[in-house]
Amino acid sequence: MNQLLGTGALVKLGLRRDRIMIAVWAYAATAFAASTAYSYGRLYDMVQLRREFAEGVEYNGATLAMYGRVFNIDTVGGLTAWRVAAIGAALVGVFSILLVVRHTRGDEEAGRLELVGAGVVGRYAALSAGVLIALLADALLAVLVCAGLIAIGMPTVGSIAFGLAWFAAGAVFAAVAATAAQLAQSARLTNGIALGVLGVAFLIRAAGDAGQSWLSWLSPIGWSQQLRPFADNRWWVLALPVLLVVIVGAIAYALAGHRDLGAGLLPSRPGPAVGAPGLRSPLALAWRLQRGTMAGWAAGFLVYGAVIGGVADGVTDLVKDSKGTRDILVEMGGQKGLVDAFIATVMGMLGLIVSVYAVQAVLRLRVEETGQRAEPVLATRVGRIRWAMSHVTFAVVGSVVLLVLAGFSAGLVHGLRVHDVGHQLPRVLGAAVVQLPAAFVLAGVALLLFGVAPRLAVASWGALGAFLLLGQLGPVLKLAQWAMDISPFTHVPKAPGTAVLATPLVALGVVAVLLAAAGLAGLRERDIG
Image (cartoon, rainbow, N blue to C red; front, side, top):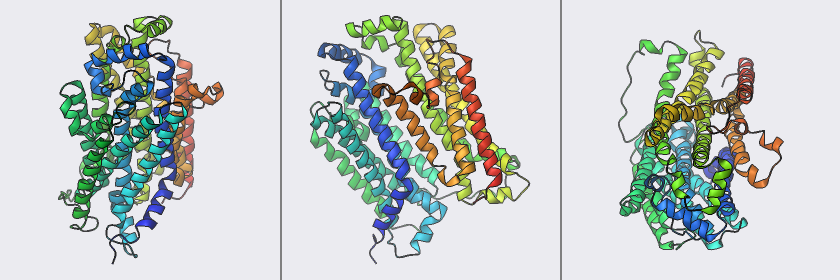
């Protein structure tokens, strides 16, 4: 039998399942790139201003580690590629990994592939479908990004190179995820392996840009930069990700042919015959299920906060000779105003990112339900509300922990650099904590959909994407204020640097509680499963 038979049908099914998520992600990433280019075009509308800014970047090691080097200091496209190429490539890689794992190891772990495999489906159909879905999503993103950049006036050739750079990164990590899916026996471990490879690639790229430049050539994320969109447009660099995709993809297919369905090549350790005493409550069970995810997020937020704290004080060095930026500094309150604005912007980004964690933690309820693990728990004396609240608790507590860690590390490092820890630490920590109510609103939306319309629970990601688009494109498109106010992040104070009013934060908290209450009420009335 043809080993790829049924691949087309599985691709159609997968695209139907993920059509909303893929569309939201593609439009959000496009908005990220286009809004960055538009902002740079307005802020640095003269070549001299762009050169002064780029020269400041070259002397700031922390900034080079985070974003990379500027390969064309004379154009807005060159600055845009510097700002979003590496970070965007990493985000595209994350999305590709999640898609491939979802349609390979995730479906295999849930038992769906065993059901599909009972039909006329080839051995490699599911693996091929998962990789193709990720590649099609990456291709859609590349086309939209290219079109978006061209629409705002960027050069066509550079825009095509930029889109291909992101597509190449996504393809590489799709192949990595396909290989990881053959090694691990669970979707969680598969994601951990693939995301770990991505993290190492990003760190190697950062080390290369900040010091030894040859290291960047060892990282697929570094290749996205070395393609040099809007500068040299070095098309031959694309041969590197193509070669790596072929090699790693071939390994994935070879491994897939040497294992049983449901098994992984890495041996799994059997659990104890009797559960530990600490697992006698739904809260303890939720902790057991959520702790690995929370630990990974916490480590990332701690490191990212420290990096931001190290970069913050050097922001003014990037623009110290720019007359246009000096005028802006006067409006913002001088040098202190620029640093505060930078910290406020980064904390706003962290608020969006922690919302991803909050939604993910709440939607663990849906995973347990569809995996038929909720029914045995609810068959005991555990009630539905108690079961749901056990996971919601970690969505709330986890969000608090993540933002506190990021705010503390950023404030501590920034305070040490400016020799004012006692003043800067509480200011930066407070700027992180005020993001919590907006994240709680997203968690409330996820709980509402899970309780009232569980099949639409995945639309929680759509809500997050819509709020992100409002924040990125609202000012650019000059949307009405009432439209901007739909996003909870619009109401978060831009701290530090501005007064923190309790009214909007309390209002967001009330909205989050009402959404959660409605979701729990719906959960009590609907069928489970």
